[in-house]
Length: 120
Length: 120
DNA sequence: GGCGGCTCCTACCGCCTGGTAGGAGATCGC
DNA sequence: GCGATCTCCTACCAGGCGGTAGGAGCCGCC
Image 1 (tube, rainbow over the protein chains, first blue to last red):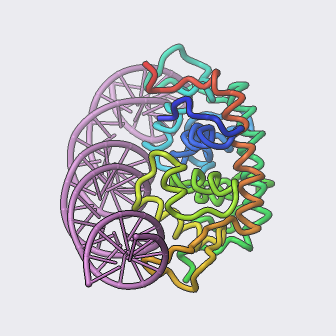
Image 2 (cartoon, chains in turn red, orange, yellow, cyan):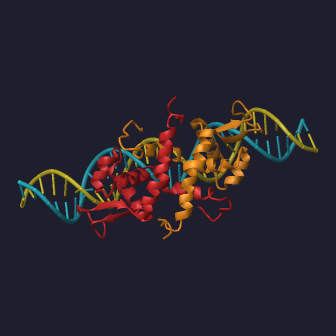
Image 3 (cartoon, chains in turn cyan, purple, red, blue):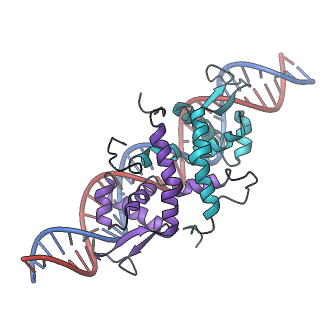
């Protein structure tokens, strides 16, 4: 997907590129949680409140693969290693503090106007 | 979901609120396509390139239900009515031109740095 | 050594999104 | 009238995300 069909200024295929970054519902939440600084996996599990063990692992792997976060403490994923710490990469920081934060701000500002399809 | 647990400034639960707006991959694409102005359904089908008939209908319904777009030309959805035109509501405009556009801009600017998990 | 905590994996299952196919109803043009 | 076009719906299906459960391997503490 997302071929080079981008005649319009920015918002035709780049939207899809952007959407892929937040397609997995939990990824931006993890990203946002990491804005507080380097965090261990278990702390993320407690902080994020609602995320499951597996989903967090997958989200971290996706974000790692995308280069949005780094892990520190081990060269490879090793079970049991305790010093493992995840943190935002410069790219991830730029994303989390830029568009992601603005998205959240917009949602916060317009939350009242948003008609939720589920709220009858 | 998204209860009032929002002790952190903006980016804990508002992120989830925001994510719900773009959870359906095609919604922001449709929204972005509507930035060009009021458009008929069939024109959207051609313009968006890749969207299927059903998905467009569903996306339009979701966006309508959320108040992000309006339809003009009929009071109710009526099969066959030709004058039906969809356009951004003020809320949708604020979203499409604000955070969504910035998201796309960020994606455009950092596209090269994004390692895609699928690109080998 | 024994126990618990931490990280990570797998297998299974349910739900939802998106794709395909087909059709209904209405309008327009001939 | 008739066909073409447009809007919208339904049914079915594949794939993926997320949740649950269970377990493996390693570490630190007692």
